[in-house]
Length: 345
Image (cartoon, rainbow, N blue to C red; front, side, top):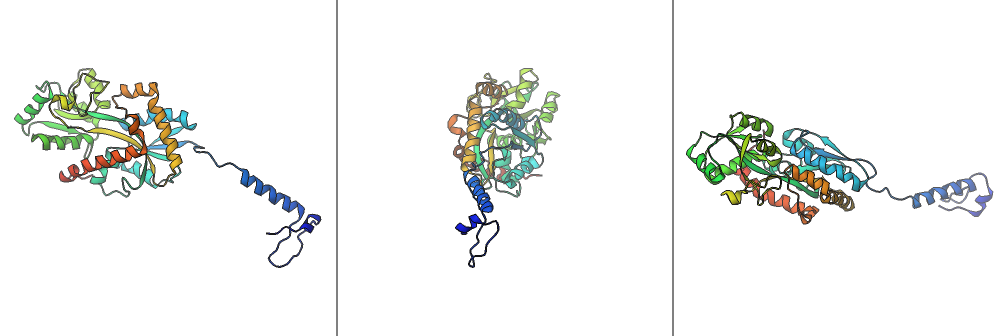
């Protein structure tokens, strides 16, 4: 485009040679102002509006609890609220699917866990890939399971419990939180490792299993620490071991499986944050930084520990560490799920 000198003395468009447009002074001035404004306007800084954190389960469960604790503190680092959206159904896969289909701009992220971004991939024909369709942000605190029985079970420790299981073949009831749940897969693995036989009884959630255990209808189960601790503290049930390498600060009196006689029997309900694939690295960096800052806050750490969660170490809080951890969990649990022919309903 050419702006001819004589156009500055004209009040109308003037004819020029073909392909050349001559502008009047007012129009040229306006055009110049637009160009200067466009070139000098700063890029929008992320985040410029609230962020939605999708949780694939209902309000009040372990996933929702950890999401709300961390999201509340992330606001301080990001300068924008992180709003929890609970989208339930299909063992959490509906909510995760929403994240997979979201625009990768950092304004929709999701809480993934042991079920949704690991075991579900072996159980369901999902419309997304649990690895390739997501960008890891950070590991979140995890909830190790506790092996729990009703009080009238005669075993006083895990060694006695395993012996009791073997002498009461087919008479023991083991409650699960549903097909493919951590308690279900844990029960399948316990049967495989010990050779014990007991009946797996599916429920719709851990709260129902616990209720029936307290009333004496269920003998045995494994619960996340977040579910088990309240009833253990009130004496309504009995704990035998924590399925982790270390004891949990919220209940240091409960031995680990290594200490109690079932070495290496580790299973934890872990959580992490993911974004849709394609999100910019700097956006992931800001979200990761907000999580790291949240998990370093003493008040947040106290709340997390009181709920029975384990806080990941600083080196476990990087996107690369979360990706490596997810890969290792898939390699561990998919063969177990497939060998047991566990299928989603």
